[in-house]
Image (cartoon, rainbow, N blue to C red; front, side):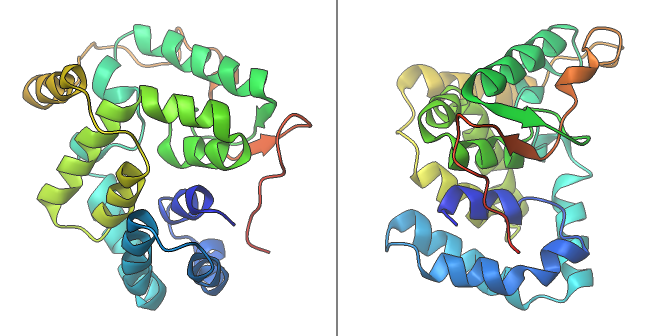
Length: 214
């Protein structure tokens, strides 16, 4: 179980299945190499592994469910509720499919835990996608830091695996922070076909098996 899959797991809602698998996740994290990113991730896991299930669930909901600034859907800061987001989601799903990934479940393909699972299974294409979303991930890091939530350490660990922001990307982060996501009074259903509405990433032959806790 690599660092990106661990990040994917801990950024999902801590339901009964994930809570039951915490010991295995923490054991896998201890086996990772010693880098700045893995040290930050293990710092988070000290809290995540010891917290009561109800505390975990409350913290997760308070962090991610009530603020657009901490949304884990990566096309939302750039597209908001505009119709263009449906096209962006479809293109993202097509890239997953081209790399050998298939979807089941309710999550959108831009959901950060889904993308991190994809990175674990297909590092080359997944790494390219992470680099493309670097400004949005940085925006999320800043929002979580403002909230002083333990989950900030997971995104900090992720950012430590990514290239430094360029001057253009820094300007993009400032612009998104100042303006917020674009708004349009429509949902995704009129223009986003059902095939862009996935959740857990399920690999096909082109990618290594997605490793989940037993």
